[in-house]
Structure formats: C-alpha cells, structure tokens
Image 1: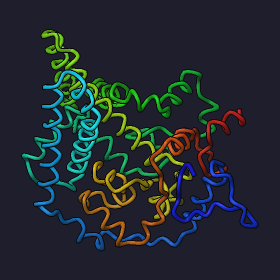
Image 2: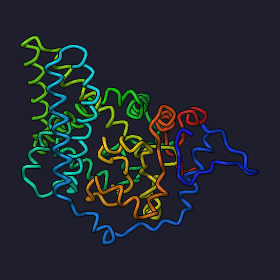
Image 3: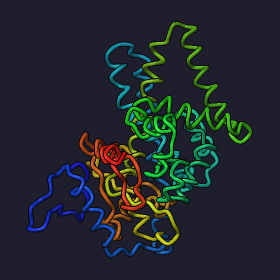
Image 4: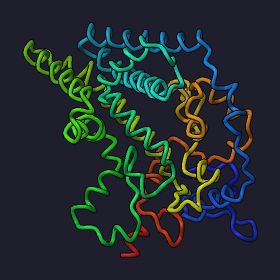
Length: 362
C-alpha cells in the first residue's frame, strides 16, 4: 500500500482486498482510526517523560556537531569525488541539527541553557530558519493543529473545494506549486530562503533581525567564495548540504500533516483527541532513520506534548497504546505519490480530495 495504517485490513465485503493503490484502501484505515477507542494520556501522566537526561542531551549534541564538522572538513579538503559525495550524509546531519534546534525552541531539549540558545541561533541562521520566525510560525502551527482554515500559517495551505472554485488562475497556480513536490526539491530557495527568511523580514523587519542576519551570512559566504574563485567549494560545502537538508525537512513536514485519511476540523465541535492524532502521522521507517532524524517521525506524540525530549518520544509511544492508532506513513515513492496527490479538503465528504478527483469535479 502507498500509506499504511496500523488498524487497516483494507478489505471489501466478503473479504476481498481492495486494490492497494485505491482510494478506498487508503481511506479505510482512517475510518477505523476514527472509531478507535482513544484515551490519550494527560500531561500529568507524561510529566516523568518530560525530564531531560543531561548526559544524553549533551551526548546527542556532541555526536551531531562532530559529524557536522567532520563532514565540513572532508568537503573542504577534498574538492573532487569524496568531497561531493559527503554532501549527501552532511545534508542528513544538517537536518538533525535543525531538529535539535526545533526541540530547543520548544523547551524540550537543553532547556534553560543560554549557551545552547546561542548555538541554536547560529544553527537557525545557517539553515535559513531564523529562530524568531520559527518560534512564531511553528508556535502558531502547534496551537492550531488540525484546523483547516489555519493550515496556511507555519504549514502547507489546505484549501476547500469551494475556495478552489472561487480562486483566480494565479491563486490556483500558487496553491498547486506550494503543494507540489517540486517545491520541496527547491525548498532551500522557496521554503527557507524566501518563505522562512526573506518574506518575514519584508513583512516585519523589526521583529525578525535574525532573518536579516541569515541573509547577510549567506550572501557574505557566496560573495567571499566568488571573490576567491571558490564557488565550486561553496556549492559543495554549503549549498548542496543545505539543499538536501531543506528537501528532507520540507518533505517530512508535508507528509506529517498531509496524508491519505488526514483529519481536519472546521469547528470547535469537532475538536478532540481523534483530531489531535488524526492530523499527525507516525513515520513508518527503519530504526536507523529515526535515530538519524532525531525521532521527528514520532510526530503525533510530539504534537500531544511538545516539551518531551526527542530521545524519549519512543518511550511514550510504547508506554501508551492510544498512540498506536496514529496513521502511519511509509517513506517511499508510492507513499509520497499518495501524499502529494492530495489536493483539496471537501467539507461535505469530510476528507481530502485527490487532484484526479478535483479534475472530475470541475
């Protein structure tokens, strides 16, 4: 199947399986999920998991920084084959640094440590994710998780069928592009350099001085390398790892909240635990992937209580069976096609319509 749900047998009446790629097969897991008996743990029950383990936190940071500077050294010292090849794992390491910054801003990791705040401010500048912008937009995203009308702030926009029909051609093209995989491939320019840095700076320059600092940093690196004839080195050591990290981050964030069976709400009456879990997925991936990505795939647990350190999220997932009802999304071409194939929210059907269905409705 393109997207796997834990409690999804995906069978028709009489026991015959639906075709794996069919819309019915992809939606049936969501239907079972919405009827599951969910009893999410209270925040008081999760208090023991909020506690940081100081040695573990420092060890995680040290290992990540060592890997980052080792990749940097190899990229600088080897202008040929190895220097270019190391950009790929370096992109994963940069992604992990970004996730550590994400947890620190939430107050889940290395909290109340001024030196850590300074370090992650620099990480924000390097990854084109200024902390002031990230704190504002991502905080809004967490406070409005699952709200269809608020999805455009700190996340990917989700239009209704009615809004699509009333939109201009230009508006439709922009919306399609923002939910297109090409937007993730070019994410270092579209999502981060523009969306996370330049646009907030132009909108509220006084509120985001670090956005200006990020642009100055990268422009300075580019100009310096160009002046000394080292543009290939800039591409190899800075641009390519950042582009890979940006693509990974953009794709992960998309599939965490845009997957077949995702549940959005449009009124307070619909709010509740099923919505909290129904609009955040669990990444179905090998253990090494979770380690490399600092457990960002345990996204429903993180959304339920964002101050839990990332290395304790698997403990929470294992300790409370309710989280097993979380929709699971696999990494792979078929799964990505299914996620990026979603187009518009249908208020009447209370589900996402695929672009193929949208074309049939037009």
